[in-house]
Image (cartoon, rainbow, N blue to C red; front, side, top):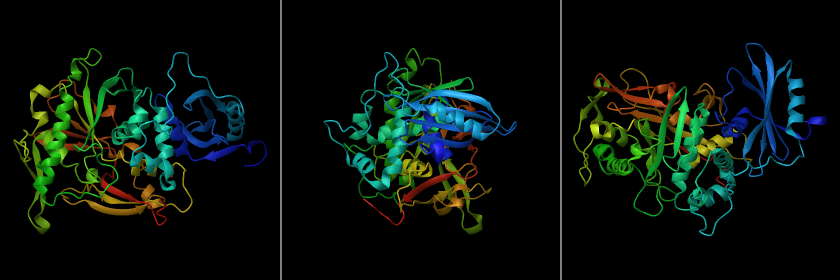
Length: 456
């Protein structure tokens, strides 16, 4: 830019959306769309020019950093006849060179994410914070951390050390919720989140399925899926999900005064081995519904089928069908994703404009085939910079596309699908497990390769 706007930098809409995760309803502007977005040279302010396609009028939204670097909305104006007038006002509202916004009275100042504590840093945090190839992830992680309403005092020390995966999962969930316009509260120590949209609400407790090792699911040799399908669906992986969920249910969240009589769900992600999240997903619904899916027939006669099971086949012979037990009716459902990974944050940061020179990312995996009667997934391998990759979804890759909600058919407080509209919803109807989703293309599993540069 030149002239009076030389101290502004134009940014893409996705980067402003990432900043706007700090807003109560995230980057959702009603009938308005982002026309242009800018930030100052020192990133102390950012703003968007919004357009209402129905009236072709323009408005502005300004965010400024607080002294703790969090974004806050400081100005919002409408009624501009053209984008030049909107930009002129936006520049004034940035208050370039002025001090950052103050910390509200009584609010605790959160610890900087990259300020290493006395416990040191895990290899996963070192990879995130000190390698150029993961700069996009670091920027995305940082903005999600700043957007958390009220992280607990141990968040940073946990994230920097052995609870890296658990805290990354919380950041991922926050991004998913806010992206969908869901209001997120952290007014109580537990459960982790209360979410609300359209008058419906649900309490969410987040947990990760880990191994018995102090550090699990992080940097290490890639662990492949068991070759035996029964072992993959009903064996040790299913038992690990079962133990993790049962452990959370023993906390009796439903008896807490602020939760009692309201919907409650557990959000779970699998980090028990490096790479396990790529293949472990199928074990979760098998355990929840006590129903094992399989393929029967040969050639053109192949079709999906299934059978009820009473127990998992691991060494503990845990009863299958968490949702079949009336004692668990207080559990509205289980929220799951296999995308709470550094690769996801790296892609989202890259697409938001933080793109180190020479770095590209190629995502390869399998898509759910929605063709009636199809039993095999559709393979894909695409650069995330390519038009073909962006075209997989109406507005490109989103945070919530890998989010799945498994509904408890016996739930005493069920949640409506519209509470988490971007998730794929699984539910029982007429004795069959069915799904509902807004996405034409759903990624079942994927890995992301860092192009040709391979910098470390």
